[in-house]
Each structure stands twice: as structure tokens, then as C-alpha cells.
Image (cartoon, one colour):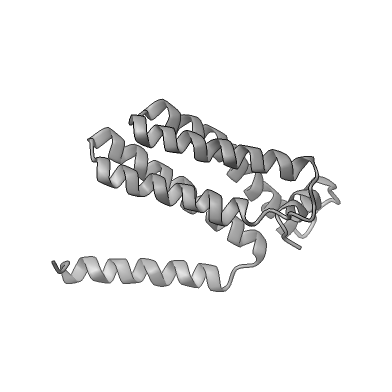
Length: 153
């Protein structure tokens, strides 16, 4: 019923660390945190699937779907219906459908497919952030377009 004190302390420390990251984050960093949390949930789901832990797998897939639906997809700038926004929405919708199938079928290949779709997006988003933070940054038409697509100003 109760967890050991060390476990509770570790959990509390992790929660404070996450809240601190979120509280002090700019909009670009918040999206990066969503990608990080999504990829972590997918990795956890994959590990649970390998162990045969169907409850944990299901919890982590539901968590991943929520990050996609309520975080990344909801953050898209709907006033800006350009190609980038439409493509991202399509990737997120497709990923949600594949994760649902992976959960029902207990299919590792479908889970890996979604990981393969999300990792490059997360890497690209982090690259945009690194370039935007660079003091010697060169003007880029792609970075503002990507930031505006998800409503980051």
C-alpha cells in the first residue's frame, strides 16, 4: 500500500525537477519537454511489452497518446493551416492510430514504427532550439516557420 521512503523521495525529487523544468521553460522548451516525455513513455511501453507486462504497456501507450493528442497536436497553430501544420497533424494522428493498434495487438513493430516517426521530429525540434539559442546564429526561414506552426512565438 505504501512505498518505501527512498522510493517516495526519489519520486518527489523527480516531480520537483520536472515542475522546475516546466515552470522556467519558454514555449520552445515546453515542446521539447513534450517530445522527451513522449519518447520516454514509448520506451517504457516497449520495455513493458518485452517483459509481458500488459498493464504497464497499456498505461504507457495511453500516456504517449495523451502527449500526442493533448500536447503536441493541441499545440499546433490552427490559425496557420500551412503544409507544415497539416503534415504534423497527419503524423500525430497516424501515430495515435498506430499506438492504439500496437496496444490491442501487442505489436512491437507498430510501436517501433511510431518511435521511428517521432524521434526525427524531436531531433529536428531540438536542432531548431539549439540554432535559435546560438549567439552567432544565421537567419533561417525554417526555424521561425516551425515555431509558428506550433504556435511558439
